[in-house]
Image (cartoon, rainbow, N blue to C red; front, side, top):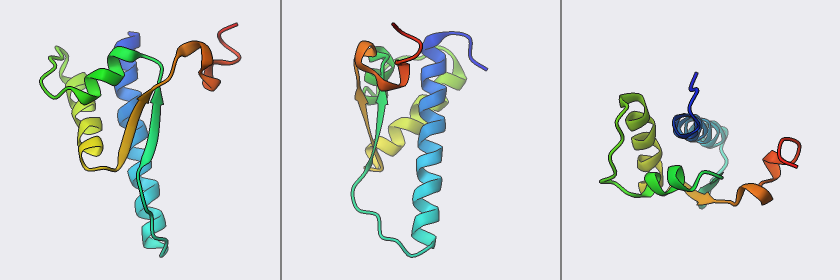
Length: 97
């Protein structure tokens, strides 16, 4: 479990990409054709930008591995990672008044 906000955003983005790949493979095995890519939205601008910048330095190894996994799916065209402002994030409706 990550206690820092920055590290937890990378780990959650990695988990999200793993679930997207799993769902896409499951649908493909069932015979559905999937066109386009999936979208991931994050409210931490630095974490979203780090997913796009290949030469950015991360100091913890597990954050580096999580971020590289997300970068690989973005480079492969499987996902798109977008920044959404925290005040308009529908996932935070009940936690941020």
